[in-house]
Image 1 (cartoon, rainbow, N blue to C red):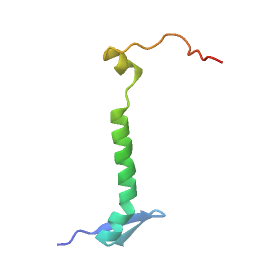
Image 2 (tube, one colour; image 1 turned 180 degrees about the vertical axis):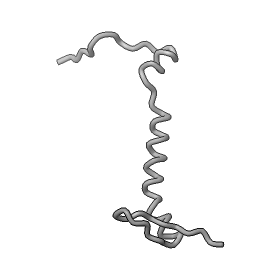
Image 3 (cartoon, one colour; image 1 turned 180 degrees about the horizontal axis):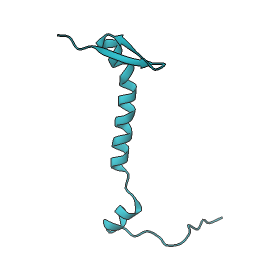
Image 4 (tube, helix red, strand yellow; image 1 turned 30 degrees about the vertical axis):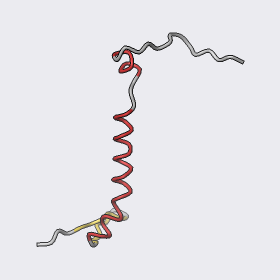
Length: 64
């Protein structure tokens, strides 16, 4: 039994081939994975403090 593939367009489920389904979904999957990896790499200030890094207190000062 072959699996059926559908994509949603304007609220309607449209039957498509496996190739069309993957071509349609791949960009969304890639973006979701990119965001997931980026979130894993980003650290909060609290995580830096827990790791032993010091953060400057007070507002940042810029030289002019």
